Image (tube, rainbow, N blue to C red):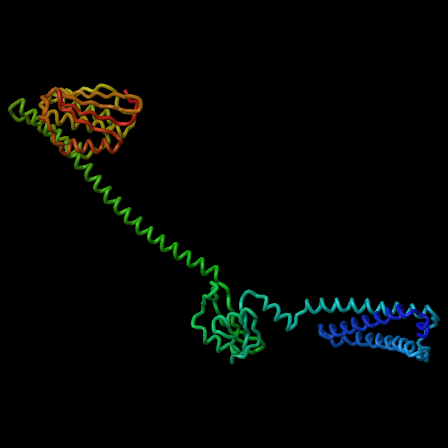
Length: 421
């Protein structure tokens, strides 16, 4: 070490700082080794190396003190020489200190990583503190063994302070579910755990805010669906009633048309012959029920042909000019109109001829029905027959016009061009 006397003071100062850093790093390495897993056995070699560094620091410190006091005294290091003399010994000393420093830094980093990755009481506490859920472990008498930060926060919000007994805290809970002022919803659950024949209590708090909001949303939707279901049931009931009324009205009008037609034929026959034609009466009454039951089974053209044949028996000629509409629904409406018009013409107008003119103009279909009977009075009161025809025509987007002068006529204008010959 006496060779350091020849070095300039900046070099000696650098060596002093190097020794100080080496002592600090080795001390830290020894401390981290002690707190790591199996730390006592790992700290023993670090303690020996620290003693060596301290010894080297004392030797160098004696050199510095001798230079400052001006008294050059032997420091007793001759026994430490291992065949290396002069400046080579000094450089070997410095390289050794640097190696120990590098090793100390490496050991510090290694022990720090071991502490962070190994399981310990501190690591367990840090782990459960990072959980979103609240966790608490205690003995059956309420003594808390472990409680994370989230559970402590929930305690403070719900009860006003952090409880020191899990049993007291659980007794203060009036419900399993709590909605906090910040809008979050928490569910508390208490469970018994058996560990090595010992009983422990686990109290957990789970954040169910999303599930709570979804449940509330589903309940609202269920209420809306129930309301819509009731409205739909009422609508279906109304539609069913309207359908029944419509069918009843349809049957009533059909009976009115058929019976009116048969009665008109019978009255006309009696008026002309001044006597009852029993053969005609039997023919008219015999097919009455069949015609009422037939409904809409016949096509529009066949229906018109039968109508012309029936009225021809009593000498009433029904002539048709122009094709029926292609639209089946409207094609079935025109025979009903023709039958009602012919019946009224025979009953009220004493006509012997009924002329039906059908004309198709672009997208419109027009019908004009006239007869050779005397014109009616100025004002006509529409009964069930004309009223029913008007409703049917207007329901299909058409219009009905009654003309009384100079001759009686019905004029119908409906959408739907084209026709069947």
